[in-house]
Amino acid sequence: MQTNKLPILFLHGALGATSQFQPLAAGLSEHYEVHQLNFSGHGDVPFSEQGFSIQVFAAEVLSYLENKDLDFVHVFGYSMGGYVAMYLARHYPEKIGRVITLATKYNWNEATAGKEVKQLDPAVIEEKVPAFAKLLAERHTAGNWKTVVSRTAQLIEELGHQALLKPHDYAQIVTPCMLMMGDRDNMVSFQETIEVYKALPLAQFTVLPDTAHPLEKADVPLLAYYIRRFTTQNI
Image (cartoon, rainbow, N blue to C red; front, side, top):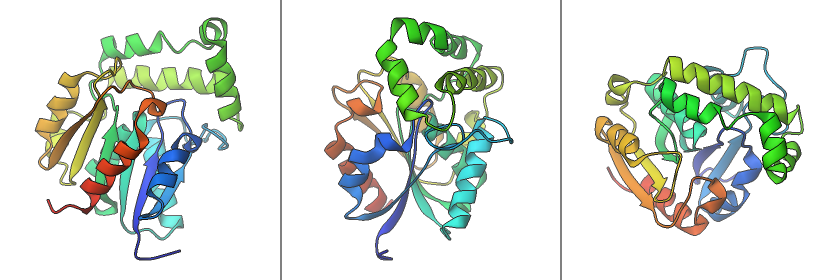
C-alpha cells in the first residue's frame, strides 16, 4: 500500500452496494488509496443487530476507519451514502477530510418520505420492474433483497418523521464539502441541494450535465475529475 496516496472512502446509496463503484474506483486508484464498505444488510454483509439506520451506518464507518488505522479520510457519498457522510462530518469532524456528495436527498419530511416509500414495495418492484428485482437479488447476497427494500422504506419513513440533519447542523459543519447533483435528477431537487450548500460554511456546488439520479448514469471520468480537483485544491 502506497502511503503517498490520499485515502478516500466510498459510501453507497440506499439499496446499493460497493460493486456499483467499480468503474469509479478504477478511475481513481492511481491517485487514491480507495476504501469501500457495504453497510450492514447490503451486498455481502448481513443485517446488524444494532438496527438499520443512518446512525448505525455511520457507526459502521467509524469501526471501519478504526480497523484500517485511518485517522483521516476523504469521503465520497452517493445518495444515502452522502447523508451518512454529512452526518459524520457534523458529529465526527476529526475523522473526516473533505466530503463529496452526489445525488443526496437532504430535505426529509413526511411528504418527501412518503413519496419515496411508495416506490419501495417489494411486491410491486417484483411485478412492475422484474429486471430491477433480479438485480437487487444478485446485489444483496447476504440477505433477502425484499427485506433490504422493506427496511429501507422504514428508514426513510423515520427520516420523514425526524430528519437527523437540520439547517443549524449544516451551519456547524467545518469540513469542506462539495455537493454534486445531476441536472436530470428527478429524486433530488436543486432547491434542497442549494439550501444545504448555502448553509455550509465551506462548500461548492457542482451540476453534472445530462445526468439522472442513478449512479450508473454519471459520467465516470467527469466525476473522477471533480473529486480529484476538490480533494487537492486549496480552500
